[in-house]
Length: 318
Image (cartoon, rainbow, N blue to C red; front, side, top):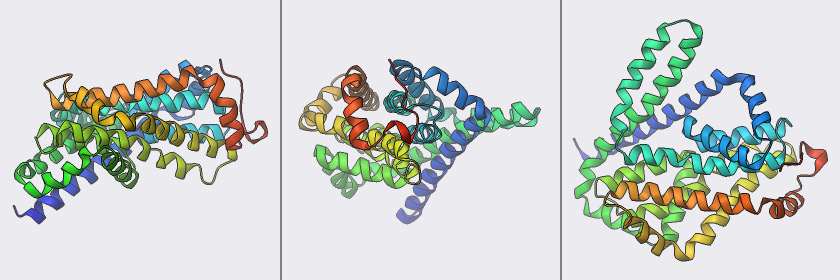
């Protein structure tokens, strides 16, 4: 296979991965329907429950972009208040680390099993058919990741690529690369999955992959920002708050990111798992800091972003 053919095969696998993620998220939302919105409104009554809901929903849907966009939409519809949405947004950042763990455990080979299982379920009555589609798309996500891994193997011996990727070891460059790439593909799962696959194949050192993965958190906020453009001020404020949380976390970590990456790489002999640990530690610490200080942060944030009471649901959240 020529290098050009290999490049197009890898790009096709990434597109297939994106298609699988979008389809999986869409089918899960179709299964929940309006019942999902009612349930979300009830269980996000406190910041901590909202956090857990955001984390769980994102881990299941495999897309923080979908969760945050849904949160913005629900705030716009006054289903959940602005403050409750903040817990959901912070939880989504933690839930998105599930992709990193699944890839680091080298579970990409499970894709065909879920594709076949989903196809079988799709033959059954209507309700099972909808669930079958979700299962099939879930399998497609990991099948595509396995294809990406296969297509990237020839790159192990590419000195030019290694030199280019080595630039990511400079924390700021790595963060910017992760943010821009994630904003372009509209999925932090793609960025995280690719980074860990490259680490597992020895193409990218974990110290370079960690800034890229952390930068993907900022890039993933673009979906909610775009979704909130045509909505009411309170919904736009929710999307902007999501960006500010992630950007603030990156700015706090940035001066120590090189040493943090090295420390994470020393945690385990498995380089892919080291990236997953770093991703989890970063998102969890940032989320906990904001959750613990939300009583002080939320009022000025609400005022600054223009999310006043008249613009839609700002109930008090413990």
